[in-house]
Length: 76
Image (cartoon, rainbow, N blue to C red; front, side, top):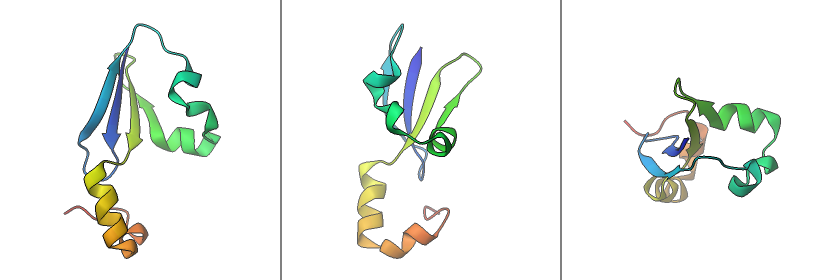
């Protein structure tokens, strides 16, 4: 199973894991609320997991421009 970490803002791949089997506790996902889990984690047709995260570039932009947090999308 591939586990893809994708930036929720710019859609760039932040990282990936290629594991035959993985425990949720290894990824730290057990800390997520049910709503966060639904919002952040999806599965594709092949059964690969896609986890929404934030890349360093978008994180810096949010720190420099805090009002971007109010927007659904700030990358044009």
